[in-house]
Amino acid sequence: MNYIEMDTACGKIRGIDTEKCLEFRGIRYAKAERFGYPEQIKGWDGVYDATEFGECAYQHRAFEDDATVNAFYHKEFRKGLSFTYSEDCLYLNIYAPKNAENCPVLLYIHGGSFTGGSANEGHISGVRFAENGVMMVAINYRLGPFGFCSHPAIKGENGAIGNQGLFDQVAAIQWVKENIASFGGNPDKITLMGQSAGAMSVDIHISNPLLKNQLSGAILMSGAGLQRFLLKPLAPEKTVSFWEEIMKEAKVDSMEELKQVEPKTLYYAWMAACKNMKFSMPYTLPVYDGVLLQNGSFNKKGIDDVPYMIGVTSTDMMPIVLQRLAKKWGSYASKNNTSKCYIYNFTRDLPGDEKGAWHSSDLLYAFSTLEFNWRPFEEIDYAISNQFSDAICAFAENGNPNCKAMPEWRADFRKPMHFCEHTGHADWNTLKNLHSTFAYKGMG
Image (cartoon, one colour):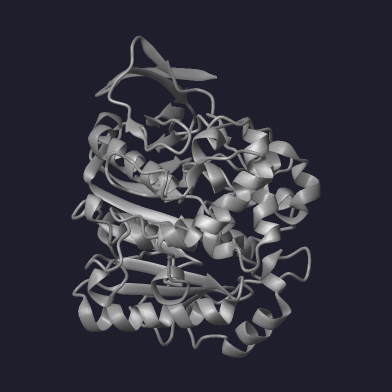
């Protein structure tokens, strides 16, 4: 393995010089105490070793066998890999083109319902992007009870209540803004890309006053508009009963005591509260924290006028709902924004089983990581992957996904671009999406 050392704004750093790009793994971008808000890293002593991935956020698979508790996605994304977990998980990974100079930056926020996932799963890679001249950054952030504690007794110096994981993301974006030029990236051309909960995060950040005028575009995969148009966030005071249930399960009397319990105790108390309380999901999502996510954040005028690339898969999680939200977003953008909104429907049924184009399946194509997966992919799958990946690179560069690899992509929310055996514009697969919604085929 070949290594490279370079100077950055934070100090010297050591990374991996691969055949196709430069990789810098496990860069600490911030630090934080439990339930606290992140403090951005401004520098380090000596040479930072960025040759190994950092710890992932605590989540279910940190305490139980992933192959048992999440068999489908374990097989698709994590089989054969090993991970470490910690509350100290604020790390990011950089995939940089060789000899990069002022190149566009794609910053990826992983999904997982704000309760799972990490930046170093097998399907996530920036190698193909780097080969095409686009720098990719993938980040970890705190999850579940460690990243979304919304009890009003826990209040940051910034006045915020809750959403610690979202503030982690902001710290990562700001770290990239301040440091990416050292790696050859353009700090004025940062496109956010997220899938599922990551797309919901991107949706929040495009209206986030802390990031005003800092983003050049947004890619939202299978999650655009979920909280903006449908699952409106709760106010922190609405979550008090949920956190009281967590304290009860953890056998403590206060939030201060809850700060001190073992991570496993906190996690299982949170899990028990999720099971004990009816309709608990809204309590685990971002809330109106009063700073980056405010009561007025989600409105038409809050959709920043930047280019958008939005998509769903045909057997996605509740695909008919996600289709409707994507069309609604596209309609709003076409009426209120000068920048264009490009919408896709990923409709290639993956070979190997009858799951179709399941939730998250498009990531394998976007990141060009089909070879990591067990499925018997065919030549057409690699062609679709090249189209999808090249379109993302073009979007990161120009705010427009049109490229030589595929037919012309128009900003048409009524007839999205279908990535499939015959990639091109077509009507929405409404009947298939409706059937998949009720069959829950895409949930894995």
